Image 1 (cartoon, rainbow, N blue to C red):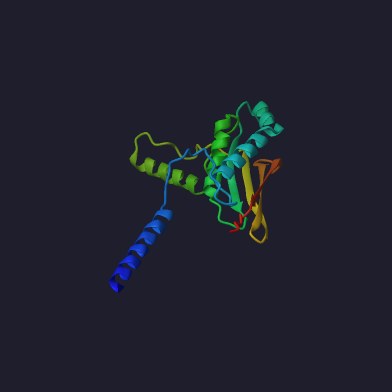
Image 2: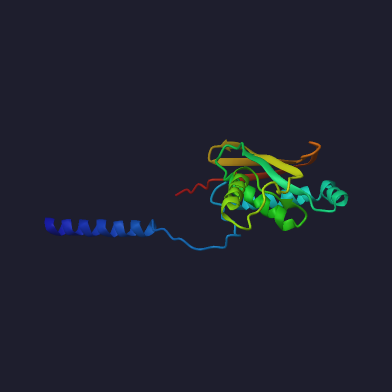
Length: 201
């Protein structure tokens, strides 16, 4: 009798463990990169893309771009000075910066020049070409930036119990490199509500 009860208990535990394993299985599916999957109220890839596109559209709608092209018979050239993350969470600023670059280039209204580490790497490559290539690109022929773009991402979190509102504010400005004049100042706000459902039994 004891042996039968032991076998029954073992079978019950085995069945329970199989059910638990099945219930905790992980499934991974491929989805479109353009589709937003919001698992939390945190800043995500869709926020980065939408904010970049909207702010660059707004920036290029201001008179500075038209005025520059009329006066110089060419499109303005922009460099990204610095985009700072001043929010409460880690944000992939490089991803946001690349979204901004793509929006500028895609617009066809302005050109973009490399800055920072990227610019230094290109200059190192040109120096290497001078030593090793018969058709090396000449030093001192870079296009200078006409305007410098900078900005920041800020956030505020308001939470009561399991409900939380996260507010993001992105501020950016464009400075004329010659006159130091601020020709555009833009702002984009995002507010996200995360509510935790409670189930009663």
